[in-house]
Image (cartoon, rainbow over all chains, first blue to last red; front, side, top):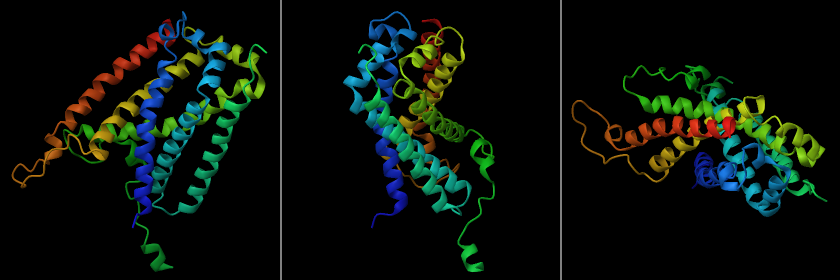
Length: 118
Length: 155
């Protein structure tokens, strides 16, 4: 029988493996000379950012959800430890709400970002 | 009620133990320093991720003008570049140490082989190459953070 604590640990490890690759990619695309631009600021120009969202939207969403799951699952573990599990249900509910709200925000960003050159 | 209470084990050292690397008075314990740094950077990352998702949604929420206005501040030493710099520093440590933890805890690499306990009773895991991985993390972290600082502030 799989215990809940084990599931939590597996979620942390699987999302961590995903995040190693996705975070590296996320940081590397901000390196100016790899993007063929002059400065860091230029890597954030609307055209490049829109191209990233358009071309790699699914990857960005996987990244956002993996980061949210990993981050908030970890935060939940820490809070449960600090409170000795006294407020387990409350903490779990708040964490789930935060994941849903910020997941929805990330999804809206990928779907709703307008073309800078309509 | 009393029975219910007894099920909860008190966290006697309290939350402060999470940010105190010397809560266990053990010499030569860099793993504890890494644990504390991993936890602190993890909490900060969880908070910054929320801000990051909110800020990167600016073009979708308010349009590209607001985005361009913010991005124009992303040069030299400004609040925007400092934000990127600190976020990257936190992410570098958490990521590098996370790779070490994955190798050690998830894949069981670099933890040494079990042996019969004998004086001076040093656990095989403390003599195994995970310690070298840890030193590598402490070496690579400032280097990568400095490179990020160069890109963010001077490029």
